Amino acid sequence: MYDPKYSWNNHINNCIDSSLYSESGSDSDILSYIFGEGGTSSESFSLRTIIPDSNLTIKESSKNLDVPQKYRHLWVQCENCYGLNYKKFLKSKMNICEQCEYHLKMSSSDRIELPIDQGTWNPMDEDMVSIDPIEFYSEEEHYKDRIDSYQRKTGLTEAVQTGIGQLNGIPVAIGVMDFEFMGGSMGSVVGEKITRLIEYATKNCLPLIIVCASGGARMQEGSLSLMQMAKISAALYNYQSNKKLFYVPILTSPTTGGVTASFGMLGDIIIAEPNAYIAFAGKRVIQQTLNKPVPEGVQASEYLFHKGLLDPIVPRNLLKAVLSELFQLHAFFL
Image 1: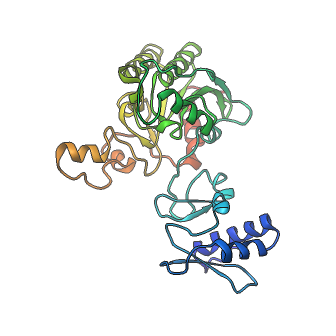
Image 2 (image 1 turned 90 degrees about the horizontal axis):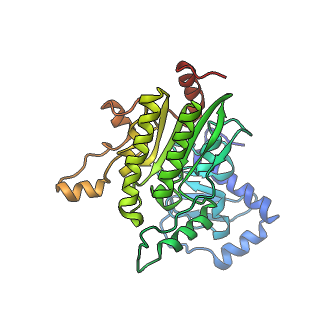
Image 3 (image 1 turned 120 degrees about the vertical axis):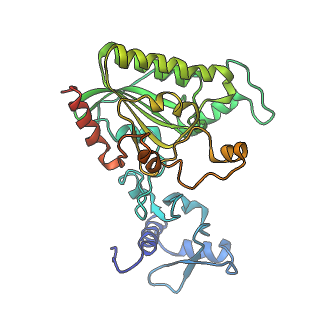
């Protein structure tokens, strides 16, 4: 049980201890591992895990935890505060760090579950894959091999999932980009899937949501990837200006490059997650081009909000309710 007088480190470590016991059945396996294969005692440590009813102390560094490799899957380290989040609890908390409330990255499948009512998701164009249109060559890895590798790793066919679902009973069209698939980069397949989604929403008069998480246009497809910006923007013009329908992009971390420069900033209401990294060019590129430092925080969603570039900044636990209110306000009802 969590005791508030202890730090969050003790709480997380207790969770880890409990899981170690439940998976191993006893502490003998852990003891034998630590004494037989464990880390050295000469390092500098700042965190400690104490196994109950034993004299063993497992010492760990704050940023590079020296623990058995087979137990690393039990927790996720926050990239903002470096706090440990127990993995079993993290999904139920919408991948929000329990310590600093930083919004960690999410898979596209998990993001779909946030706003979409259970059992209403109907995917579109799942079989659409890239065929390496310009036969991009790299000494490190062929583009087609890289695509195959990410398909095996993520279980996806491309860097976006599109489909139809219901949000509190309201039918919606939604596209969700996945940063784990080649950095969420936008190639011809991503552009085509999003364009088809917009055209379907236009034809059926559905509100449209696109969750952006991307490094920009995919360099392995050259100018074809850049043309997706124009194609998607043209489809959105017909959807918004001609049909007078309602489009909401949700900018998550990171949203950069050609996605920011096109459909990421074309929404009727532009929503961003807290502390999301949103930019056109990366910080390093700007500094090398201008030969001057980029001030800290100028590419964070809070700064952009204060400059008028965004509308609301909405945490994940409130996102579904906010979207539902917006759709009802714009005359989309059950």
